[in-house]
Length: 294
Image (cartoon, rainbow, N blue to C red):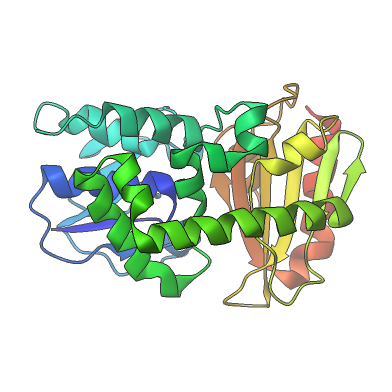
């Protein structure tokens, strides 16, 4: 069997649990949701898909994104939940010999952005949150690191994981990256009513960093939009949208809205990617929908 998942903290935890519960015989297949949606991925009948859109013919499927909700029964489990990892844990809990309760609690909080202002401002004080920020699907060369984290999370406590030399180095790099990202967010973010729009298309390589920080820097905003070019394809624009975790009031179902533009996600957060020729049409439409807040 093979695990097919995405490279974020939720996907990494899903993989750790599946390794414990199933007889996994092949390396993890790390993919992006857009690759699944556009049929660019070759899957097999023994694949276990987690935290990604459903593909007909897989062995098992686990997900929690509202835009991926199936219209018929499937093998596995789908439900609205804070994390896909929590769903995998619920499905296999009786079979697992290790208590993953603490790990799942943190995966739930991180994936659902159930965080305090202190955690957002100083993620270096929260080992699980900081660890999650060292994972970026944008850097395909990091695949050995994602695989390493899967194995570490299977059998080691968080203090032992954070003491690993590679993890420690990446955490230090992430802290420095977050400081740079904070300055760039201030320079490249503009408010459209209560919509904070961060446009990084002027960068050859879009800056990355603490994805929750914009809600703290622009507390008057109810929703944030980040625009950038895809690293692997400069002809592709990626738009990420998230409701503020500190200033509730955005009524737009983000995932459903972005499904109109080739994307998807949760009610509170999601992303869409499209050819840059659509930018002058799609981006103003997205911002307009968010400003109307209907």
